[in-house]
Image (tube, rainbow, N blue to C red; front, side, top):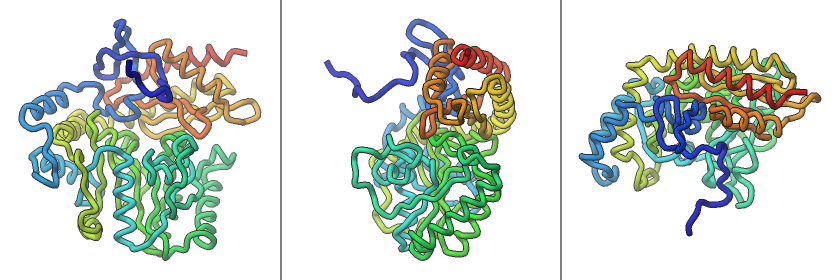
Length: 418
């Protein structure tokens, strides 16, 4: 009898029968608050009626139209709608399936456009699991171990992770920029560096936001040396952080944006956006793929963008995110086992540490499990998997946030009693 790979470990014991909004119902009928959102994918909630209707209508017309062979209306409509929300100047799109594919497309474009071999990524970043994307990932060795040699030309600079260093944000930022300059002097010369790749908020790396001063430093160096700024918005885009793009918090204009996850409410779709001038520097034949820009996924994505706009979901993510962050901090104040609570919008992470400040994986895992037993589904992240993260759909209500916080408080109390 066939079975799933034994290395696929489930984060929760739930076997889902159906999803509705913020809830997942298991095969026994139990209702669970889903604060994982498929790792930030189901932005409009599970099975939003408008997204379902758009997908159903498209399935009856055209399921797959390979988009370097034929063009189809859902892709054209999606391209037009994305043009209304993309950062200024980014008016050219290439579609693929997964975040990893999007990152690799951005890497290929950056190297071809600049003629330079190297890229710089930042400590704690996650960019995917395929060979190039995994090479660029430093949020945990589990993503890159065991299939070396990895791709060359990738160099790692510090991210201004103030809590990890035990500093204030300003000190961490100055350190990170100083070390970036040292990297230029010792490892990859600026004229050999094609691009910076960075997440506005470290995702798998522990839900650590960047800051305006750090991005200003990156932009100044990018402009001075002709280096492209690639912002990985796979987890932070489409309203997740309380602004449409995660980088909108930091007054920065990227050269390339990578998109995926919340774009299509659960249908597989990703892509990159750049200026037409920059995208035109990709080599002929370097962009393509069998399933990229799938017609059903594009129809779902176009409707997702409409739902986000019509239902004010970016604004909801901002207000509900403030509520969630404040509530999680109040819970942390009651136990020394949570050393830090941080995030932007509906990306909130609680980092568990021991009495001497070391990562506390066992307690984080126990708290996540206790929450699941009580009907609140959460995930862990961070290099030591000691950060419990909350990623509810953007449609979450104030009442659902309160319910989740009540469950979380009980779960934390149950595993941190002396």
